[in-house]
Length: 213
Image 1 (cartoon, helix red, strand yellow):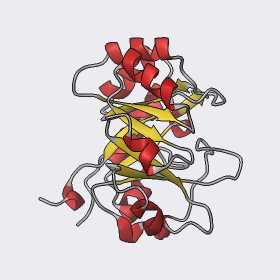
Image 2 (cartoon, helix red, strand yellow):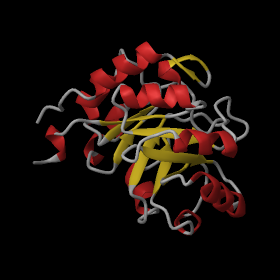
Image 3 (spheres, helix red, strand yellow):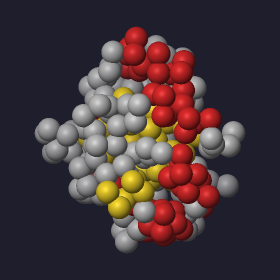
């Protein structure tokens, strides 16, 4: 069986409390994302993140999002929270990303001049590549989409689509790109950091419809 007929994986990012994390899992989320980037409105402290991780089942992937963070602090947070997967959203190098002895995802912001294939090749150790919308002054969380046709040829078991996804457009996005997974934060929120549980269910249901062959 190829990835083209598997259910799309779903990550709900920007989780700030255990209630929302559990609601996401109950709705069918495969992973939850915790933002360790203080300028973000969805920032979560390591102590709260540890409580969230401890309150989830063993088959839920927990993802820690960092932006150009000091490596010592990343290691401290990993020791406290036991996050399973890392997501780097800044200008981190391959060498930096590989030092933590955890699988990692590299986020690539789709600026007009970015060559997706070239950027992926710069991070051979990544287990996945998350493609997000670009704004010059923001590291994700823009609420905007980008031209999905730019990455259609790259579709595979390591491609994660993000950027402006909502319950209303995620089925179209999955059909167009056929990604391994989709990632959403603002598109399922009542306010930054507070999830809309109805929107969570609607988004995950739409995203997990089988991809056409």
